Length: 196
Image (tube, rainbow, N blue to C red; front, side):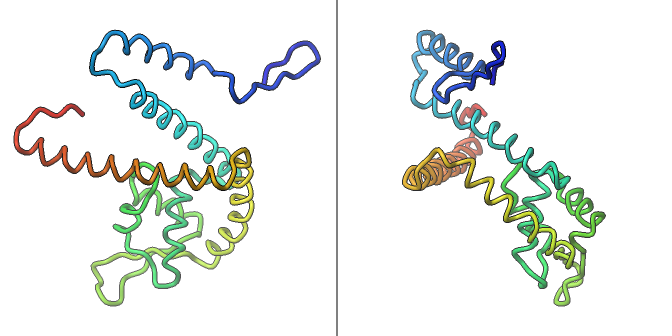
């Protein structure tokens, strides 16, 4: 929003912001400079990275009143899914949706807050499990309704059909990228040049 006199002027959704304008200009320049440049692919990559950053910041702001980072929130949801049986620590790291920071540090934070506890696996004492405490269960029961309501509000400008389509396309893209990364690893192990 920009203030002009006493009026508050809202930014229209179709107006470009500074970063969007910058990267559109860079794309135009590189499009004329490099033969390998493929505008639709580059625009998709830029839109994904920028949109991720915007949504990540939105999530962080929604969790701020609860003193949770997106990583801690994600870990709490993963641990909660396993119920009283507990979740192996290694599983938390494998299932995190956000960048994989020090999982032990995330769990330590949640333990200090009394939201989770560490327990030994009865079947294998070498395995450390993490599970929600009763306080952790109450905490999620308090947080999740407000969080899910704000997620619904965030995407209110899109129809359910658009949301499903975008979700399907993002899933397809993720599978393509994962397959490409796997194929790239195979090629690089055979000595071909791979740019990361």
